[in-house]
Image (cartoon, rainbow, N blue to C red):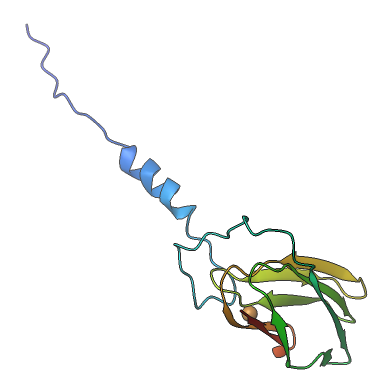
Length: 137
Ligand SMILES: [Cu+2]
């Protein structure tokens, strides 16, 4: 009497691999210029004084309103935002950009350091308006 059952190997590895890959698929709301190769360089020296930009959002208006501001490459940019409505400030500084959540009526500070030269818009996502244009060189 022989016990001859077919030998079957069930492979579940492909499912596990696919699950691991999806973790990497996160994107920001604004999208556009996703370049996977650009990692933020935290190596910039801290000899430059930070550039502080006060931003006020009230009654559907932003202040400043599209103003051009110069920053040096590697200079930390500090956003001090007060808004009467919940908003999201977005700096299009390349890669995923920089996002700052601003709760209504709560002064909120955020900072980032541009790691490449260029002209970058900082905008209110709630209003769709450009707050400042940052010229980094
Ligand atoms: Cu944006």
